[in-house]
Amino acid sequence: MSRSLLFAAFNEGVHRSMAGDHQAAVQSFDQVLAVDPRHFPALTAKAFALKQLGRNEEALKDFQHAIELDPTAADPHREAALCQLALGEPEAAALLMERAVQLNPTPGYREAAAIEVYHLGNALLTQGRRPDKARYRLARQTFELALELSPAYVEVARALADVWEHLGDPAQQEHYAHLAIRLRPATS
Image (cartoon, rainbow, N blue to C red; front, side, top):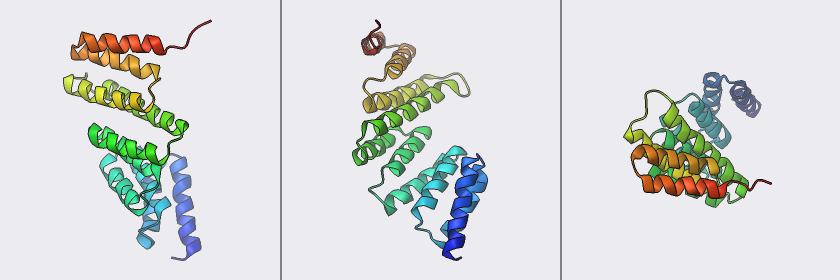
């Protein structure tokens, strides 16, 4: 495959992914990777498309491969962390997220990561069957990671108060409820 065909296949994958056709995007990125397995943009784009399809284990493998190819790129670390959270591995996710924010220490990057982590925590509690203690514990770890990324995130403090209430720890519930009140912006 010539460079121009490789570029065309990559662009086709990007356009398909942007249009929401992630399965077709994966196929386009696979064409690129069949010719150049070290094509970092195609590898990360494919992993992202797999993540969008809910195929987190496959996405994680590709993000880990991308990290091997370029250990200084923050986004594969962050995306791998999000996959780990979706797979119920908050400790592994925390390590990857810590590395991501070391590689990109800008406040906006931390805030964006905190928002993504917060949404994953909410998804744990709202998807499928009624949450049990194990899901509340996993949500707690997820929300704690979000609060670590963004210590002033009011919604995360509220979510932690709610989780601790369900876990039966009134002291922790009260701690996070008070934290949420203290974090609220002053009204005029």
